[in-house]
Image (tube, rainbow, N blue to C red):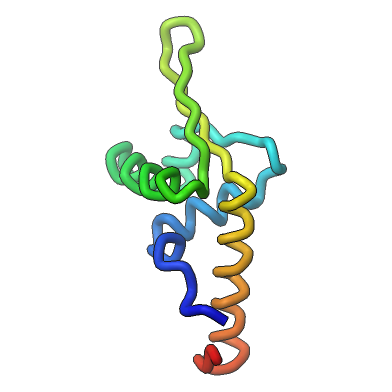
Length: 101
């Protein structure tokens, strides 16, 4: 067992990954909806999405519908694996009282 995933472990990023992992494999979540779920600002969410995207955990799609910009986010296969592993790490801490060996 590892020491967990420091990228995913940060509270806002953990919430992002948990929100996205509830969706189907190809489903996306609008930036504005994700922002409302997390109760955060545009800038804060954007910064955390950039970090997750840099590590290949999420894919961010920016497009226009008519004249309105729209940003959609989805978790990647690598992101699902990383999240699953990190959740297993957290369960081990809970189940073993903090012993992660």
